[in-house]
Length: 47
Length: 382
Image 1 (cartoon, rainbow over the protein chains, first blue to last red):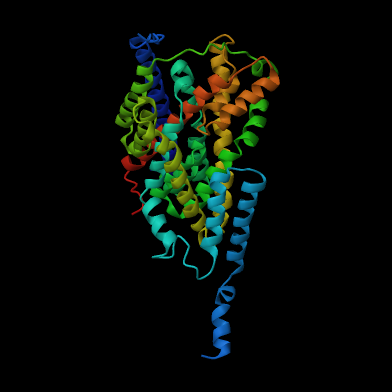
Image 2 (image 1 turned 60 degrees about the vertical axis):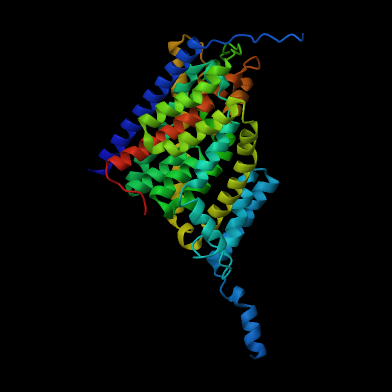
């Protein structure tokens, strides 16, 4: 394989996989946020 | 034994001092000056600078290549085994707050754009005649992440380790100087003045705890070659977010990262020797490293401009420049430039999110690079 083919393969695969992985993580974060939304913690009252 | 023999034994250090060693000792002193007088990354430059001086003293046996020497043992145990970068990632994970990213996950995509410079620099390095493993090691300077650069270079191009690690750490500290002119050149004042909605959305404790586990699982399953780095980063963050092992989180973000940084710095310094550092190749590495970080910034700002168009003006394109993993320097630079254009603009929250995304993105890019190299049958150095 010639160097420029190696470089282009690395660039396309590298950027492609990085973008796709981070996009998947974005979806996962949104899913987690839906499953476990933030709720104000109730302060425990002293008895 | 005559007085002449005694005298000659006492001056052997001086007689073995070459101009190349003297030059590198002077360079070590310059690094110490920059760290102390100018405040450039003192935590790193002081051990590196002192390591350069120790490593280049003739007959001292303190160079990384001096078999059996104390620094040679540390170098082999920590750098060549890639343990130091992994341990630093535990500390980094324990220091990072993914809160801004979890509150606004769409900024994570900037963490990918911020790695574009890595791959463009790879093409440049190949065009300049570097071998494939060398080109990958130089390009990874664009990750803006010292431990990642050391991890990849120690696997594939150990002869370039001193130049790559010094370039990576130097450019990280120079981010406030490198990025602003590029950001200003690529945006109009109207674009830089965009005020992004600021509502500090709160994230539940469960999401904070689950994120390092889930993110670690997904990224490692996709690119297992980067598991040592990503796994340690997420472990460190899990220690912090779990909230039940504060002692471990504290030691990771304090004593552990400090000790490893000290040893890593000395080892990098004592590996900067005349034979492997005073070469034209080193200058090329520095030029390509600068190109990598500049191209990261260009790609990030371009994606920011695209996002501004897509969201009909709701995104400030400067945010894209924070997609590198120079944490938190890039985020600070974005905040400062945004406020210069519009004092009402407060970009730090969004920029921190993009910056932590850059931390994940840089490890991901390095992992994919290692996976492709392995897939092509290019073996790491023995």
